[in-house]
Image 1 (tube, helix red, strand yellow):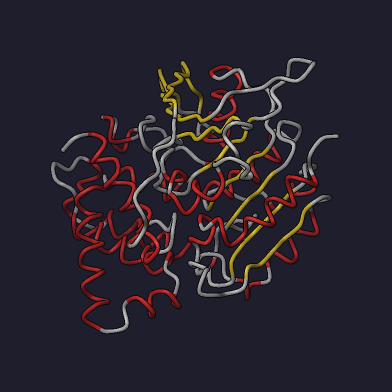
Image 2 (spheres, one colour):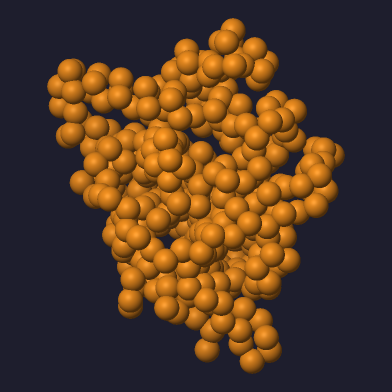
Length: 369
């Protein structure tokens, strides 16, 4: 299968199973728009991970749109970093429900005005990952490592010394909070969508842990040295992820009979098993294991537009966490999108028409005079 076709299939699978969109949105998405992206790769020599592990060369792949602009002092002033979700890659936010709404002429991220940067995170896409050969000997990366590598890629690889905005979805949402604490002056503003800035515990950690353990308890996994994918482990893991990423209203609407519902699951799981590497999966699901920005939220001084949706299984609003945590940041606004026919559960973060006006207002409010 050609690489481009493999990538498209893999992206569709992850949009379905890892909630870059909701299950039904991914199932019926339109054909990708052809954006004039530029491919790039940055190699970090002897990258040091938070665990103390190192890797001789850490490869980071990225896509860009538009051209960087520098102000009178020589600093980049139009760069926007867009961060994908767990299991996605640089192509995930080129999905038409996101890119067609935001990237065109006169739109919030007009590529004739802004320099858009879409990285493949560690463990994802064409960046370094366990399936390159190290398997379970690949360093146990986390979100701090991802943000540190993104910063190096921007400053040393792309010569971007400042960002207009960081917008992160799901895993990228969590990374946005890490960015705000680790490099508080680097971005004019932060837009974290679909996450909570607290330790992953309760149900959120439980379903992730169950997915991880499903793979590890499949004898075919063989401690990561498998010759064929551990299909039963992947089946159990992705059963959980479909539920976590799904939107009940849309699932009921689009699969109203038992036959339709079961047929969709059969198709989705078969596609995932065919195009997912189990070790990569274990690493990127577990990368959130020590995430907890809560103690240092007050150090996030950049303006924050934080949006979740009310039908998000992964970040359920009834916990009341967001309303409490938003008060700990000096310049943050939290918006909870109510459930509607337009929301897509956790995947609402990619349905740009739902929250576009909030983004337009936020960009206007944070524009430097």
